[in-house]
Image (cartoon, rainbow, N blue to C red; front, side):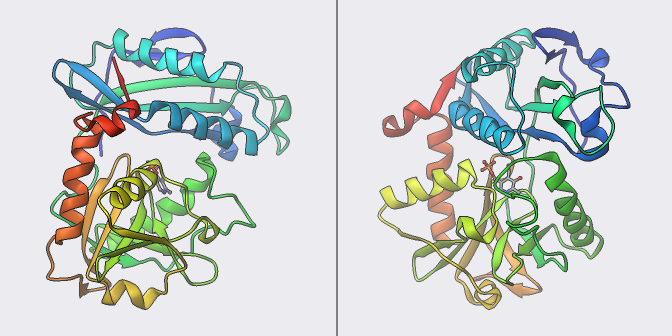
Length: 303
Ligand SMILES: Cc1ncc(COP(=O)(O)O)c(C=O)c1O
């Protein structure tokens, strides 16, 4: 999807014109994928921008950086404040996406990046739907998800996303909307940028961390609200065949929100339209992100 430009990008404590937010071509991250990032949504509602689970995203950003020996030259609070500053500077008054990125900058070539500076940028820009709300057609990818013993999928590191790009392009070229990865042992893992849930007999199942997923903040939100709605939720290994026999399936993600899956490998899921459990969770999710349910109001930062 193309980018909707905003006015300013925050780069290392300065607001820079969007068109001037540049890096040198010898930036380490450009060559070796040595950057970690987040994707956060802000919802424009009742005259304010409601940013969802900002603190949790920043905690994950710092954890991703820690895994890659990157010491971020700001505190978590400073990064949160910089995000708020960037939203205000851009006078964002519509649903938006917030993209902080921490990257190894210019200074060294080669595979030891420790001496390359750690730089930070934050972009905020208008953003609509990422996947089709009515439901998506999926395939199981011929590419396996990177395994937990080769690159940590739990880190949201740029280098991990070449694996996602391979699977996404393959799926689209073959006429599907999205791919589902299996892990290195052949169990169901996740989408290219989403976590996955199956529903069978009103029980929700989602792959565990050991399957090599990114531990999604939307996944955690869904597990919390589903339990509060008195659904049973299981984190467990899932066999490929369960994809074909479940009653419902859906993706979760900050960009994807709750996206129903209507077919997998040309087998119709349920009756081919979003099922009742998916719809109930999705309705609740959209109330939660807008702060309409007191119990989860702490998840929202109003700007
Ligand atoms: C590979 C991958 N899995 C899952 C997710 C969902 O994570 P979240 O719900 O925190 O956006 C994302 C999106 O960030 C992702 O890139």
